[in-house]
Image (tube, rainbow, N blue to C red):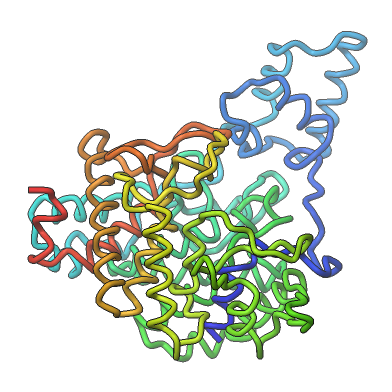
Length: 462
């Protein structure tokens, strides 16, 4: 089942939904999702970040809040409210962002988890210890009032505390949590990790999917579906078969959501190929594998052609295992040739997300932690010498560059600049965020994998 699900992880974002009838309803909140109040406040530009307002708690019921807004607008008519008018309205009707949380310290946090002993270099050992301590800053527990008065909040209530990404991302995020959980398990914070997975299982049971993040304004969309791999990580750590038995039906429920809403029928060489549980691997090889280029590419349903653009996800099947294992050596050799041809080795700060200069955060020159992990782990897991060597070189470059930023800022970043050693990421709709959940998890995983004594010189550059 894991390999079948991982096929979706690697390809679902490039597919167009075939049948959207089964999608849950969109958010209907006239305060947090749409409507005149939201439009008026956001267009006033009260805050540098558009997320600030929609993360605030309302002091009164939604109906009363909307009535207060209506009266303000009527009082000022025919004039438009000034920025000062709108700020006063917000101050009188909303509590600051973050009001949904109470102070919480993870009860399972340990000062010296065992994985630290595998990191021989003293500088890297101290860094990993500091990253372990960051979980204390990123932990969040919701107040009981959120459960009792959900309509006063935009946050989606969950029973168990969570580790959040950090910065403006003060709630859970779906695919971020996969890498956060990898770090938590290395930190031996098993109760926190399991609690986060239990939250996701409960959300699937309640609404049928896991939203992009833990706010009601995210419920109309999801992220790369990594719940089953999260459960797999919990299982590999604890071998608790009863946990799997108890929740397997919910995993099936999320699987069904993706199968019903994010699968397509593709005609390839006159043959109809349906992405169903019995044809995943062959579908990926036949439709997405490009023999001339030597890698898996996105597929355009309109042109019925593969799109020859570079993305780190082009090699994601090595991570997910959704390829013909009998031809592993062939695929790996071609992928390495492809990576050499596109010159990913020239970048000092990691693998860029694309070669597209758009100014958006998911394009050049940004390098994102999860994509580094996918490429490095995918290559390393093949266990072929050339692939493992390349994986080690990529991991070394990423860790060294992240460490350089840490020395400068004592912070982990959401994203980095691939073109500069120790470079900061940027672009998009908000300023660079620090924290940072998945960055911590990725670096911990790489230090755990490559932090032994024989790797010290390359990692520290000494």
